[in-house]
Length: 543
Ligand SMILES: *[C@@H]1O[C@H](CO)[C@@H](O)[C@H](O)[C@H]1NC(C)=O
Ligand SMILES: *[C@@H]1O[C@H](CO)[C@@H](O)[C@H](O)[C@H]1NC(C)=O
Ligand SMILES: *[C@@H]1O[C@H](CO)[C@@H](O)[C@H](O)[C@H]1NC(C)=O
Ligand SMILES: *[C@@H]1O[C@H](CO)[C@@H](O)[C@H](O)[C@H]1NC(C)=O
Ligand SMILES: *[C@@H]1O[C@H](CO)[C@@H](O)[C@H](O)[C@H]1NC(C)=O
Ligand SMILES: *[C@@H]1O[C@H](CO)[C@@H](O)[C@H](O)[C@H]1NC(C)=O
Ligand SMILES: *[C@@H]1O[C@H](CO)[C@@H](O)[C@H](O)[C@H]1NC(C)=O
Ligand SMILES: *[C@@H]1O[C@H](CO)[C@@H](O)[C@H](O)[C@H]1NC(C)=O
Ligand SMILES: *[C@@H]1O[C@H](CO)[C@@H](O)[C@H](O)[C@H]1NC(C)=O
Ligand SMILES: *[C@@H]1O[C@H](CO)[C@@H](O)[C@H](O)[C@H]1NC(C)=O
Ligand SMILES: *[C@@H]1O[C@H](CO)[C@@H](O)[C@H](O)[C@H]1NC(C)=O
Ligand SMILES: *[C@@H]1O[C@H](CO)[C@@H](O)[C@H](O)[C@H]1NC(C)=O
Image (cartoon, rainbow, N blue to C red; front, top):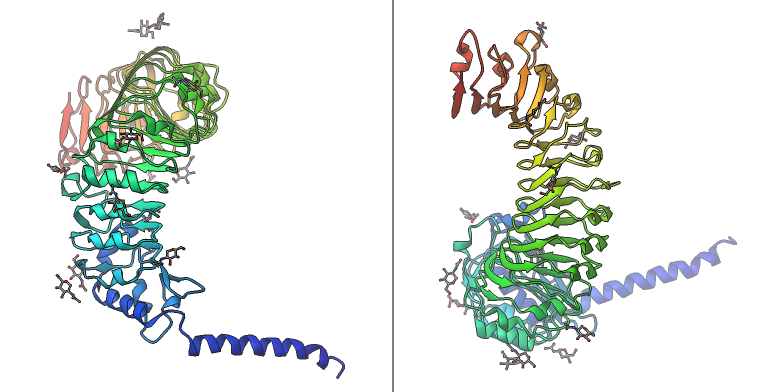
């Protein structure tokens, strides 16, 4: 009996909350009838077709038809994808990304009746190459507009530049797996000028894959100082990139990838700021990599591959201690690899291949604990392979081919390796026995060196993932078949030219995917076995 009074207030409170909630949902809709009707009409103007959101599945993003849950007579503010203003009840947010919408998008769309929208995301639907209606320019309070990969085409309307409240604009075109000539969304000079002039609050400008071939890059010059991210990946923009973009005080990410006719250089002075991603591959950026790059202390991702840079790699790069990705490949860098790179302890990718680097690989490195991919191939590097290369705990891809390296090959300390390419050097001595433990190896190429010694073929017995194996053109002798009792089921290419083989390698009998085989310059007795002749090879050379 004594407990009852203590419970009363709680029960009363529960009752009150309950009745209050049902009062709200049964008698007042937050959402106005006009907006609910406009949404319903918008929903009904499309069909629902899973193929419309293929790109979401491609990126493992959840995709489902959000509009299926929209029911007439219920509060539209509770519908999937809708956000309302808590006080006025107006629809302020509509997120129908990856919602399987399919059909043409007309300028009389009821969407444009939702005049209070602040955030609109229609990304990754299929609007059948409709034009972007100029009515999008009417959303006076829009701060976020995302029409990426939703299959609009034609010119982006100039009215986009009326959206002066925009903070984020994503118009990325189509599916990245679609070849560029089919990308048909275009931006012209006046529209870009309008965007630059009017969108003074814009932080993200993502224009990936839009055809900007008629845009003079200089009109980007006065972009808002609020800008944090500019993405012009694959926009076919040509001409001189305005250098003052680099000094925008808030810029964190600049992606100009794949604009081969975009000319530019990196600033030599006063270059600092929060830049984290500098992504310039496949452009015509040229000149030196300035010392000032070392001032970008926030840099994590630096990709300058396939550009026209020259001169030496500045040792100031070693100051960028947050760097995880460094790609300088396919340029004309010369001189030595600075030993300061050893302090980039967070690197996961280090690629300086296809340059004219000379001298030896720095040996003072103590640890690259996270390095996954090391590629210094196709340079003029000489001297030895330093010992740290063999003790990288995470290394999966090692590529030092086409250099002038002269040492022995040491034993690998970790089994994480997937590809080893050391061909076309001057490496000497035996093949290290630790190779036999690299169970994830898919590619091993040690051809065209000066390796010597006897190779027992059963050293490859555990390498069941091996697809490519080449030991050609060394001074090796491969053991005869007596010791061989294994198969390599995934092997596609085998090159054992000039390997002093005297018998046909019977372990190939289980390699059903073999398409290229080179056993030339050997002294194979007893001809080719019948089972081998039945294998359909693309390339076949035995002697
Ligand atoms: C969905 O779209 C594909 C073409 O992309 C079409 O072949 C298919 O018939 C459509 N399915 C429905 C139910 O409309
Ligand atoms: C919207 O425009 C399209 C094409 O111009 C037309 O077919 C359609 O009937 C119009 N819809 C409405 C509701 O007016
Ligand atoms: C836009 O925002 C302003 C300020 O928040 C507000 O007064 C105005 O009513 C909004 N306009 C619309 C169409 O929602
Ligand atoms: C636009 O939406 C897509 C799909 O939801 C998303 O992946 C992308 O990051 C969005 N863009 C921006 C700038 O937020
Ligand atoms: C880009 O648009 C121009 C015309 O403005 C056209 O000549 C060119 O072929 C287009 N490029 C691509 C890759 O679609
Ligand atoms: C800027 O926006 C206003 C409307 O807000 C528009 O009248 C004007 O044409 C735009 N300016 C440019 C350069 O597009
Ligand atoms: C950029 O702004 C400056 C100063 O306001 C002006 O002189 C220049 O003409 C503008 N450039 C472009 C391309 O709009
Ligand atoms: C670099 O900035 C300093 C001060 O901010 C200024 O005095 C100097 O002229 C600038 N140098 C260049 C080359 O712009
Ligand atoms: C390596 O190359 C550099 C310059 O190309 C040369 O000075 C040096 O003697 C070479 N070292 C060896 C061991 O061949
Ligand atoms: C081999 O690869 C598998 C799957 O990718 C991974 O789980 C395993 O740890 C790898 N083995 C070694 C020795 O790195
Ligand atoms: C190859 O190695 C042998 C020693 O194994 C050495 O005598 C010879 O000079 C080397 N050849 C070349 C071209 O380096
Ligand atoms: C080869 O291995 C198979 C199965 O692994 C075994 O049955 C066979 O006896 C072995 N042959 C020789 C010669 O060791």
